[in-house]
Image 1 (tube, rainbow, N blue to C red):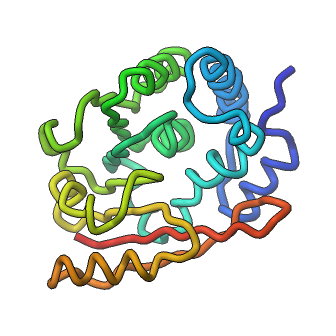
Image 2 (cartoon, rainbow, N blue to C red):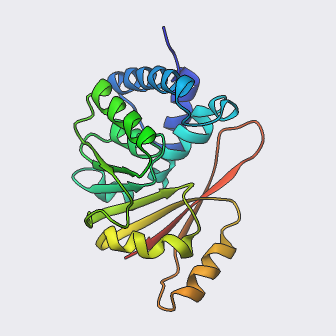
Length: 218
């Protein structure tokens, strides 16, 4: 039996993030891990070294958006767009955890999109929608939340985020520890940019690894 989400990892999610997964969700995550590793064995979604820390660096990191207090406002009935979703981080992770959240996964690379389609079908993720193409070229999604994880610098992609974000929504960048430089660059580029909310968190690794959610209100 695959125990990707074993008792230890379930406890980490519950205690650190306040998420209580159902037995069905745990089973879905376990099934997802098999689908992901099998697909990655023939079509590169991430390096073999990264696979070793699939839970800590990718699954847990994706779910850390719940540490942003306003996320709770949208998780039941809201709309989230993940630009440059890659292997489904955070789009598939959030679709699994929050069935009442409508999730749009966008990527311009067909091998990534093909995996998202596979995950949607195999896991019956009816709340997951797939947008293939460049985010600059697809119609505005008007999402409550737009997420970027491992995509680019804030100053370079902020206008793209604004294009797809509804008024009153939030733009969430998953970033490494040192984000001040990127924020200063963005502030110089966009003079009316409001200061973001910065939410630090630590990945559950043996070596300390601090990350940040950088959240701009629109």
